[in-house]
Amino acid sequence: MALVHHTGLAPADIEASLRFYTEGVGLEVLMDVTVPSNLEGLLGVPTEKWRTVFLGDRSNPDAGILEILDLGTGHAQSEPPQPGVPVRGACLLSFITPVQEALARLEALGMGGTPRVVKTVSGGLAATVADPDGVVVEFLDHAPSFG
View 1 (cartoon, rainbow, N blue to C red):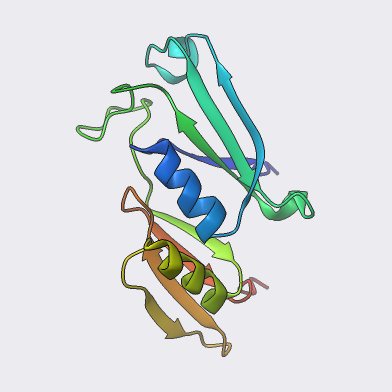
View 2 (view 1 turned 180 degrees about the vertical axis):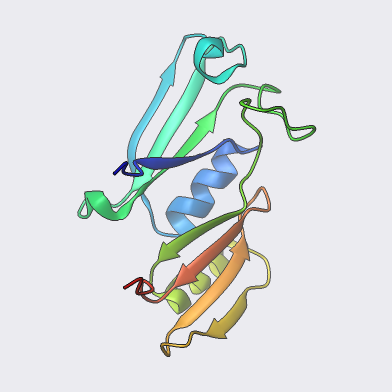
């Protein structure tokens, strides 16, 4: 079976996204590099240099990794999407974290908008907020059971 290594986002403002996901969500910077090379052969867009920042939890490497990717000004398109070419945003990112703590951090940063909070069937909390690009970010107190 294939394993998911990481999910990538190409935000409009990398610094705002890094602030949201590190200071707000609570992820750690695992790697931050800028590379002077052309990614057209891999991603279908020409680049002179690009920056990639991997975020996650050093103490739990199997928890999942989020890549924040800056391809340079104007290379990732918002509209219209083209098959196989990076676009801005995603549908939903979900994190297992203490919900109220994450919401408090984001509120202190003035980020995330007005959260939507519900009780889950298992008695925990689930909440959604928006990242700086409008991507829906979900927080769950604990992981759902699939078995």
